[in-house]
Structure formats: structure tokens, C-alpha cells
Length: 321
Image 1 (cartoon, rainbow, N blue to C red):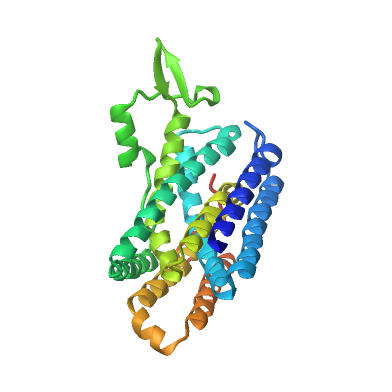
Image 2: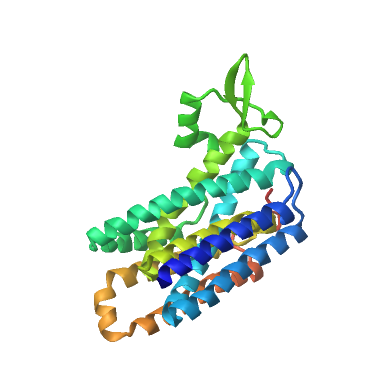
């Protein structure tokens, strides 16, 4: 009954929050200012933290801290999403006034795909728990590759498999249809560049979920924690995009911070049987939360106060839009 109550409260809060965001904080085809983005970011973070308090009251300290750890993990990983989102918007020359609604639709699609992905992942783990060792090894490998990576691969949205699939099977327009996603030409539906961008945003987020969801499952096996932390983090992605799009390129060492966390969680998953014999589950939750906070905040502050070696000052100080 308690789980049903929490899901009910989560659904009601989510619905009201989306109505509030769409009705009051966002206006159709309007540019989002830094001030508005800051208010929206505070709104979604406050909502997520309020749900943390609610979880603490209803489910106790351990589950609530697992939720907070998972949320912070997803929230930090979403900064990587923002950089890719910027490249997608630039590649298709999306007008800034369309950013907000395109992001919203793309993110809502991403949530649906994530829920399906999580449901399948949880079902597989329940049937065969040894899959968690594969997830753990995958996280260690991913974290290592991320940590030692010295340069970003050039990402071209036009070269992605998703775009090639759309181009092959759908009639695509080279324009934005004045804000429409589908227009009719010669009596036939043509899909605009905004439609393509929405699909790319959702599909790219799912690619990022291949790392983030196993990481969250390494923090908690509670379905409620996995679902709610993911959805809250992804819903806050839109406001975070507008807040950080000019500064995200300055977080040079965030990738290393995230990499350390992924390796830590991966090793924890691989050695869980032995770790649980020596360290109490409640203490493990505190350790995980501490590692996430230290690595993510430390890498962000280090990025702010240190310039990456070999990066010219004029490039390091430039703003990516």
C-alpha cells in the first residue's frame, strides 16, 4: 500500500509540475532567458528534493538516500547530454524560439523510452541476477574509457544511424515548417527538421541511458528509486540546458569525475557479495552518496579554477552555442 501511495503522489506531483511548467514558466515559441532558466532549474531541483523528504518519511532513511544518490548521478550525467543537444540544435539550425517546446517533446519521448528500458532491465535482473555482474563490468570499462579519453570525438548528427534511418524511410524537409513538425506538400506529409531534432534528442538520451540506468541499478535495486530518480533528472534537463548551454564547454574535467563514479559503482556491483559481508548496507549508501558528491562537485570546481593543459586561452574561454 505504501508503494502505491508513493507512485500516486509521484504521478500527481509530476502532472501538476508539468502543467505549472508549461502554463506559467514556459510560453510557446518564446526565448528562455537565463533568469527564467535559473527559476525553472530551482523549481525542478526543489521538487526532486521535496520528493526525497517524502521518501524519507514514507520509506525511511536508506531508500531516501538511495534515491538522492541516484538522482545526483543522473543529474550529473545529464550535463553530457546538454553538450550533444547543443550540437544537434546547431546542426539543424533550430531557431532559439523553438528550443523550449522541441526540448520538452524530445524529453517526454525520452522518458517513455527510459521507462520501457528500465522495465526491461529490471525484469531481466529479476530473472537472472548474474546480469548485474555484466552491468558492473560494463560500467568499469565505460568509466575507464571515459577517464583516459583525451579528446572529444566529433559528433555529427547527420551521420547517426537514427538520422540515416529517418532519411531513408521518411520524406524529410530541409526547413522547420514555421514551428510545425509535419507539413503537407502536394497533399503528402513531409517531416520538418524540428521533427528530426525531436527524434534525435530522444534517441541520444536513450544512448546515455545505457550508462546511467545500470549505474542507478548499482546504487539501488528498488524499482521506485530507479524510476523516480531517472524521471526527475530527465525532466530537469530542459531548464538545465538553457542555464548551462553557454558554460557546459568549460566543465573540462567533469568527464573524469563522472568516470570515477562509474568505475566505483561498477566495482561495487562486481564485489557486492564480499562488500556486504564487511560493510553494512546503510553505510554503503552513505559511502556511495559521498563518493558521488565529492567526485562530481570536485570535478566541476576543478574545471572552473583550472584550465585544461594544451587548450589555448581564447578557446578555453569561448562560449559554445
